[in-house]
Length: 93
Image (cartoon, rainbow, N blue to C red):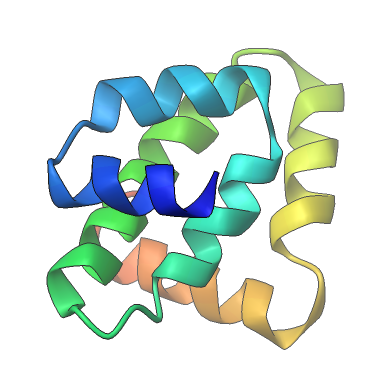
């Protein structure tokens, strides 16, 4: 899954990643890890598509949001990810 995700990020296939994430919340964790990719373009694409995928998952309601936060906000790496998402403008008021 990880190598497929990186390939999709390289090709900027955001819609496909969002569709995969809608059925597999683990993708958010993998996207979070890719924000530290050696290639900054891949890292920032991961931030961008993370916001898109989170929005799609949030459409599933409060339970989906709770699960998403448990996956992505656990520990210090989760907060780092959320800071990168916010700085990229993916989170809106």
